[in-house]
Image 1 (tube, rainbow, N blue to C red):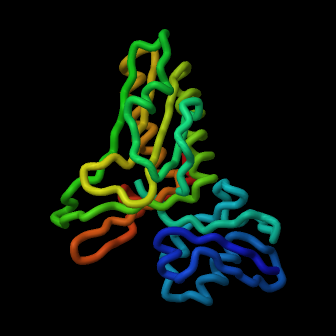
Image 2: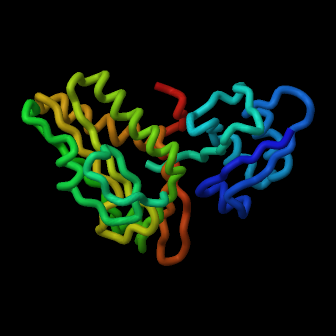
Length: 235
């Protein structure tokens, strides 16, 4: 069986391609089998492949889940924490190559019954752990990223009834001082708003397939999860 697998960020760089065809022998075609076959053919990328998760039809899948040639399959390396679409004030979540507007994102969560609105704005800082940053580059698996942003909104609505959330994320090059992400949350009361805003950015870093490359004056590196073991299938 042949499976076509999409690759992103550090995996794409390491293997020198954004898409690869993997042939599996007889037996169950699962994410685990796919990863082991890929490791056998690409041993230099073994550690990164093992730490990656399978995405099946734009949703995270367990390693033992069956795969078929008709599935859209991607291997998702640890995410950071895409082709852009035009701005649309009716769409809560947006991934774009264009500069972001805090006012535009906040307007999407405006509600006369809400007494609190918080905007989280993430920007490119000049220095990280003593290294001088020239710029950041972001890449996304756009269809799945938009689905997981919507998932975050649904989780927030379930935890904090009535809360509204809108997220815009920039991809491509983001120079020092410019904004890469804006998260706006509104709720009836401020305590819930603070908590929901924090939840949104932490979940974004955990499950949304957006990758960040830090570019310095003397090199670059893809950055993944930096807060412990990465598990987007966890709660």
